[in-house]
Length: 318
Image (cartoon, rainbow, N blue to C red; front, top):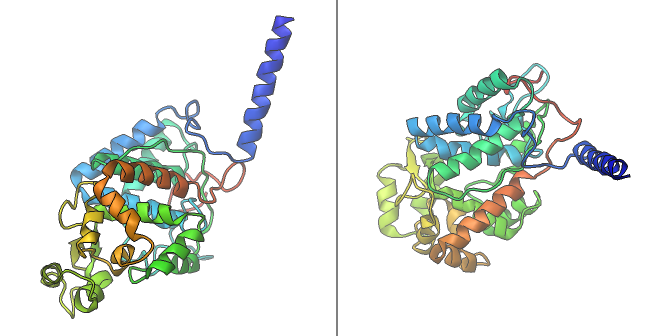
């Protein structure tokens, strides 16, 4: 009798697990059996890439953001152009801007060597973002896994879904709401700008024309971003601790030292001011909310179950 009951319980559990898998629920243990070395393989490669260039941490984090905001977290941003579609790499927000593709390629090749055809490119991008934040002193979180890869990309989606550095607060809120993310998520995720750099072309208008900017800060940035030329000259998004993940970004905003117009919109007499103030004085709260928001972003419309595929080369469909 006991054996029969045990068998019945095991059968019921397997049915539940199969139901979840077929219905596409993400799980932190998705690769526990199929590729137990998945997480450590990604971490080793990301650690090496960031040790070589600290900026790569911010680039890999941004790669995840730019992937998820276009048809969900499906690795579509990694696809090269084909004869049947133009990919997302040449979209306005991505061209000559998004980086880290080669790091993803390296990780993918290593994973194919240890568990061929198992770990998706979309999951690699998601794990890499988490590991990058941790490497620069930021919070960790449990990454939900089991995403599959798209077989196509959307140039128009990349051009329309990703918020511009010239966006005002209402536009930012709407862009994130369209992805199922709250205003709180948006403000917390904006804290990613505590690391990384931006091109002169994205902030020239702010440092020369905006009035809600610290004058000494504007002058210092203008020295590296002239009114004409030098479009690709870089400046750190956080001049104080540009390679350390902390809450200085929010302190900068309260001092009117946000590099991008869209950054300063978070502290400009609007509805975001109070949360910016909170994060500027409570790094633990920021870390907690950022981690939660990253999980929420990683859950945007994933392909799961039998949808999509697991690409063997992240740059092209199988």
